Length: 370
Image 1 (cartoon, rainbow, N blue to C red):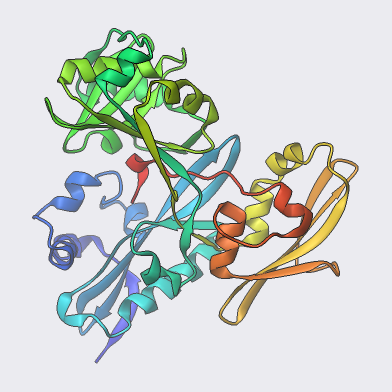
Image 2 (spheres, rainbow, N blue to C red):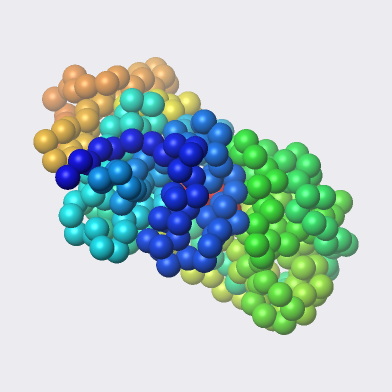
């Protein structure tokens, strides 16, 4: 049986879509309806779809979609993993494992320091991904808004097409975000509703009287509670939820007083692809956080199977430096899963003085999930 890993060709696009729909059990056209910014047929997009071909047909797929993330001023490209699928009759033959290993190699070649995906933790633990980071899900009710004295803002519901320029303009005010190349396809998806105001914008999901979810919210004037209450009143809904990163301290401070309650949980599943590259992307943020700390120098290793990534971090005279490799006697080695939790937030052991500066801020908003 002839097997090979390759990317999808334009002339087999329809076959590829039918393969995905059958593998997931989704309706025809699901992926292009819900993820039009990802499932495109231009050459750049096609290079993101890695498939395993067996005897001339696609039997398995793993997508690798670069996410240009900004987290409190730090910029890095995160390799988003999505569309992981194998035909029902071809499962259990190691095809997904083969593709994931291939895609990990591609991320290393492309210089992505971090990877992210959604899905079962235990399924992806075997490949180095684990839950990390933290986000809050805030819940609002008319009663909680009333008790907090929140007065609804003036809002107008518009189409996603009418809102796209304002969303694009104000996205940069969010402290943790994904820089989007295609704003309209991201927001013009089934079920997404757009609301504009002089105080910002709201992207929501939900119909009248039912529970409502705020997908994205931006208010340069700090009127987030007022915008949420306006949407609640316009939709006659008794409950609204909103997810925010635990690092989004300013907006949390404005929103928590009007919330009926909240839950906390991990942000997403992450994998460290390049430890030194990850630390370098956050070097300025780490250096600012280290102001006033005593000098230190230590090395850390993150081990995945037979591979160990090592980096040395030193703080001298207020300057923080990152070097690839181990150059100190003080050395901490973690397995890949504990490494993810140690650097991005989760149960882990301490890494000497470096733990004072950790975890690193990271967040992939729900609208940008792949």
